[in-house]
Image (cartoon, rainbow, N blue to C red; front, side, top):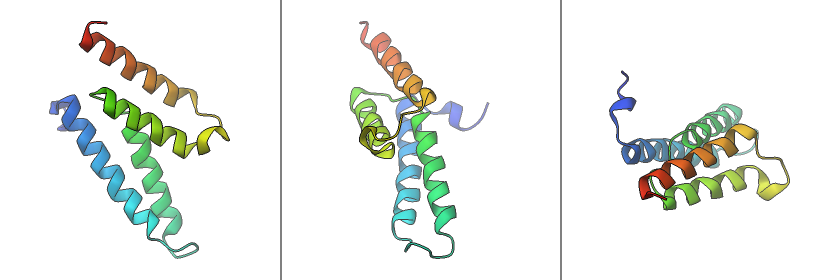
Length: 101
């Protein structure tokens, strides 16, 4: 068992979101073309992917995750990958089961 598997869904979400927010802040301050910019953007994308793969513990978290997904894929100008849509579907199933719907 890893340390992350001992976290509740809410704790895992917060940890993944904090990591994403830190990576996003670092990539945002990098001037275009500066050494390390590509790596910072790649770390931000990896953190965002990890956030997408983290179960949303609430409807608010799922909505936030979906908004980030839309932002990343440029509000529909790029197709959203199947794996990301499946993560949203899993969140819906998880939340529906929790609510008894």
